[in-house]
Image 1: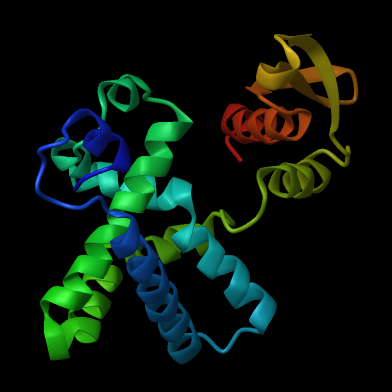
Image 2: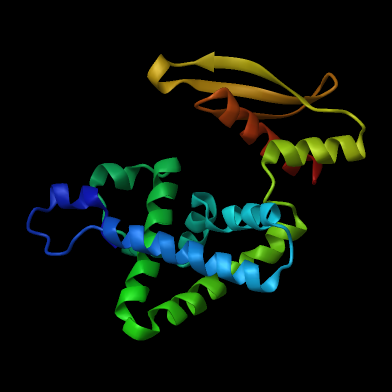
Length: 207
């Protein structure tokens, strides 16, 4: 797999970067998952849409790509190689989509069927866990639902600290049940920090 940044440092490199394959693979992935959900679940459109989003989002695709050790075969610049945070997650998700695009083209007339097999084996297999643990819900919504069900209290969020220049802010937010802080989360926006706090709150409470 070749990220665009690698070509900037290796002008003599003969292969193209992944972006066109990502474009194709993204469309194939969405169609395969949509078709699978449509054929196997009678649920209303809204639920199917949420389930699909949970299966094809960057976080999920990055996790699957790591499990498949795609990272070992991803050519990228030295700068990109040092970044192991959210940017790496984005790169891995894109690389996974590019693999789907490559399978689709490589297998010619059987391309769609081969992609179906690949996606059902590596992506759709996550669906049971997503449904059982309500992972299709936003972490804040899940935490609120669980908190109200188990404690009768609606959670609240408070900014604990804010640092950094405008272009690179860092927020730390606490999630509270009444006056008890359950967990802290951080992010580059208040909303991201709240989601992170909710995720950690779910873990802390075992919900």
